[in-house]
Length: 474
Image (tube, rainbow, N blue to C red; front, side):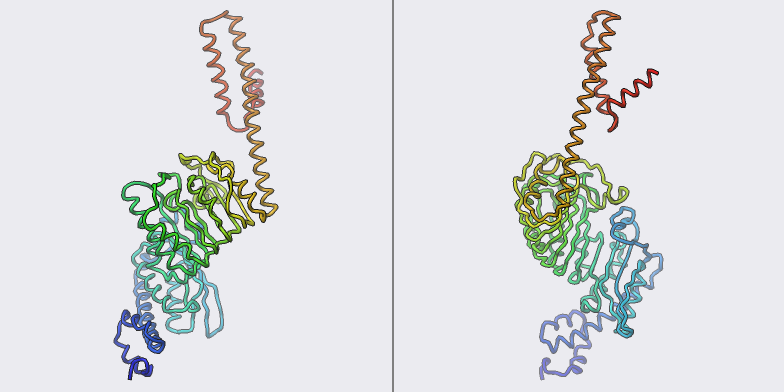
């Protein structure tokens, strides 16, 4: 009698002494053996998971304690980057009572209690978990070992039995693959390091490219992806291109294009180098780029030539969300150190993107964007809403008005100080007659007064200065 025809109860006796690795090797054989081997494997994993949970919960409370982390905005702040922040939102399905309850906890032990009950009862499922963890939690060896145990538990459970579908963490891509069941992830937020060039840093970038490739190959069900910066752009950032693409870049692009279910992609800044353009999967409909002032001419050229076939919403912003948050809330931004390579004299001429319905571009007057970027996009996307076009028209008109005001104010200041210096020199002549340094004195007075005007606060005009003179005279 062969194993493929043997009754399940006999197979259970045969498989009983086998370890985890041996049972995994039996899974690809045949359906009959797989069913029994999987039953034994599930029993082993359940026992290991319960043991790992017991070990974790037996530790001193202060060693595993975490603080509330309400949402991703908090995770982005440097304060919570240094704290033991954790937050889990999940749905508990009780098969006995036929109930479905959404639960939110910030203490890992509360979550583990429910997992233990589910394992022992066999009638409680944990679905659609949304997990936020800060750097100290993700790097803690105690949590590290626990996450590995939960990953194995997840892999022998179907998505309707146990699933963490959303993950936001400062874990490296390699550790995300190592610690979590990435096949079930539908939403992912990754934090990348600040770009600093030179020596071993380039080697580290090569490793990061490989790690990203491996991650993208293991998140086949991903629908939303956000890549954020762990530190602000502009502080030690060198945007100089390396000349050639590094090893693994082509494979990374292929892996990213393979995310067939991805519909939302947000990139906080360029990946690795400012000239590296990452092609977007055809499934993406919502696209967002931040820190666009740091993108190079080469990147914008590739942007213009890429078709973005199904993208309906495009957002280009000057600063990143993390910076806005740390500087006092969304809507504010840093004044970054601008890159040395401006793009204001760089013309795209045309863009291939055609299907936009929504388009936003913050701070379009910044001189580090291609001069015709907005006009190219507006002219090629007839499906843009009337409100979108009206918004850009209003912003453009405001820019023109501001420039006109600046020109007029300078012209007024020039004439006002010309008359003032002239009167002063007339008085000097009447009092002392011609002097050898008259020309030098006139030039210095004129330059002093005009440069003083240019450094006055915005809104302080010639009329303001006239009012001050009247006040001092009285």
